[in-house]
Length: 263
Image (cartoon, rainbow, N blue to C red; front, side):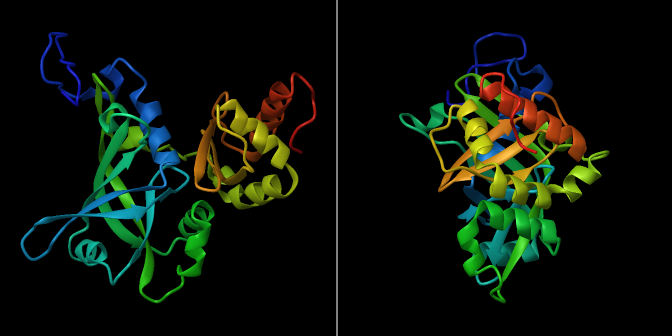
């Protein structure tokens, strides 16, 4: 009964995961939250010799659109498997106290390929700063998992399947925001740690120190040690001018209506 008792006709029975739009809860929002906040997960690959499934633990970040990113060594079995057969899946599990099956988790299936995109490197290392110690070793490389579909279990009686376009953000029209991300992140971390602390507190997160690791049209990713926080804007933004206005308004509201905020 771990998948719940949800059926298409409402009768009690084994759960049939519904399309995200029919799931009866915010399946897309929860799936994207897991993508952005979980920093490690189980990577499943296929042994090229006999097709045996092989599962290993990897660290994860995301691109601006939510595409999962990994830093893998070619000395590892999972990397050799991917280079022979790119089909893979990643399990994102929130974890927590009590029954592990009571907490949400997301499986993303797709194909993984090595990436030379500088933004992938930057976003991964921002999320996993200690990985900079070995990221340039000759056997390591960055990989992106191109999502094909997602399977979400949000807890008891909450299951949904998601399309690739429901997992990832559409970045059309947000090119200037993506291009300006690095500068905005550096500026916020240098001059507005107080605002970042307010944003994190607004999600219910404990005190930091919090720093910004990435931003996108839907929200911001924060990190404090090994803890993460996902901050959503009141409404999506697609260019830097709109982002600044939203961040100022969010900081002002968190401070109780004052006008001071990120500049």
